Length: 373
Image (cartoon, rainbow, N blue to C red; front, side, top):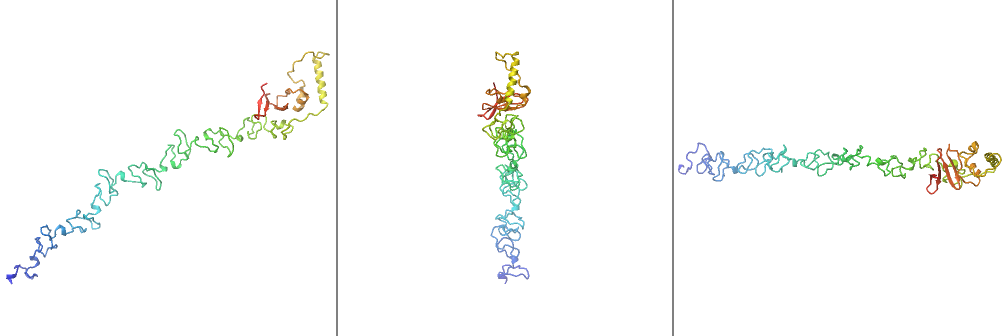
C-alpha cells in the first residue's frame, strides 16, 4: 500500500524490501552510492568513496594485500611481494642512493656516496672477492683462493725487496736493492751454492765437496795447489815446494831422496867402504901438492875453491856418497845446482831447488824454510 511504501517510484519489476524499496533506491551506508552499485556497503560514515562506494580503507587497487589507505606504492607489480606499506623491492630505495632495492647489491650505502649501477660505493665493493673492500684494496685482481694481507695483496702480488721477483717465488725476500738477483730472487751475496758457509761472492772455490774443511776464502786443501806443482795441497807433502810432493813416511824427506821412504826413523843409506875413498884421497893429495909449487906443502890456509875440485867425478856421485866422503866434516855439500837436491846433515834435512835456493825442513812447523846463512 502506498501508505507504507518508502520508495513510491520503484522501477517496474525491481525487487523491493519490506519498505518497498529496491536496491537502486537504497544507500545503506550513506556514502551517496546506491546499494545496487555500492561494492563497499559498510563504508564508515564520512569517508570519501570512489565510484563504486568504496573508501581507501576498503579497497586494494594493486592487489598487493595492502589497502590503498596504507599503500605507499599504488602500482605494485603482481609478481612481487609488498611490505607493510604496500611497496615491493622494485619500488623502494632503502638507502637513498637512487638504485632500487631489487637491483641494489649494497643496500646500506651511506648518504652522499657515489655508487655504480649496482648501488655500491667504492668502499662497499670487493671486485676480486678477497674480503678487502675496493676502497682500500691496492691489489684489486687477487687470484682466487690466495690469502691476502690487510691491503688486499697476496704473496704473488707483492715484491717487498723490489728485485722484480714476487714474494711467492722469491727465495731471498730481503735482497738489498743494489744487488742483481737470479730467477729465485737471490744475489751472489746471499747464495752459498756449495754450502760451505762462505757466500758465493767471496768464495774462491765455489765447488767445494761436502764435508771438507775450508779456509777463510772457501777453499779446501784438495782445491789448493800452493806451490803450483800440479799436486793439490791435500796430497802434497811439500805444499810450498814445487820440486817435491811425496813423503810416504812423513819424515820430512822427499821420497826420491829418502833411502827408506817407508821408514820414518831413517832416510840416509849407510856408506859402503870401498877403494874409491883411497883413490879420491890420493887425487886430492896430488892436487894439493901441485898447488904448493912443486914439492912443499902449503904453509898457510888456502882459500876455498869457488868450484868443485872434483870436476866431473863429483857430478856422478849421489848425495849420500858425497856426504860420507867428507868424513867428520858436516859442512853443506857442494851439490850441482842445475837440478833439485835433498840430503840429511846432522839430523837436519836440507833441500836445494833448481835455482840454487837452499832450504831446511823445520819439524816444528812442518814446512821447508829458506836458509838465511
